[in-house]
Image (cartoon, rainbow, N blue to C red; front, side, top):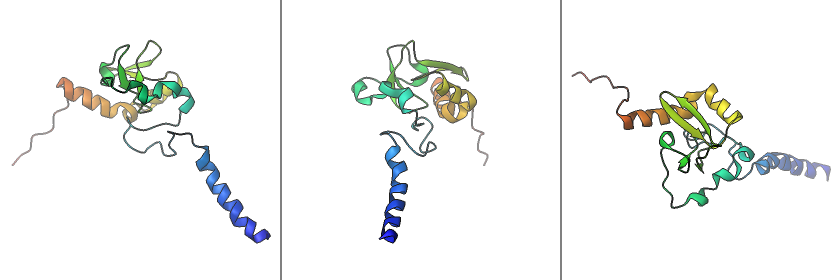
Length: 138
């Protein structure tokens, strides 16, 4: 009987970490683009990420978003409404907003290209000041 319980306990031990993840969390934060990746910060990001709440509203490019606009957080990849409480940081000539402040913003400042690199390229392309590609020679 004891030998039959060992596989059962082993299976439970493997399943327990999977059950611990909250809905929307990912166990691999490097999955997808920086803008679309979740960082497992569920409680800090909380209510601001109720995407259904913003259904039908225009989503503004992050670097253009003002108070009252809906945009996407570069850290969590979720929609939120920009407010005075939103985290803000200027980088590469553009002002970016975040659904949270504090530790989340510290992550961005520690590795800005990871979270903002793609957005900076999009902003520069829209502004017409993207770095030029070398001309092809024939």
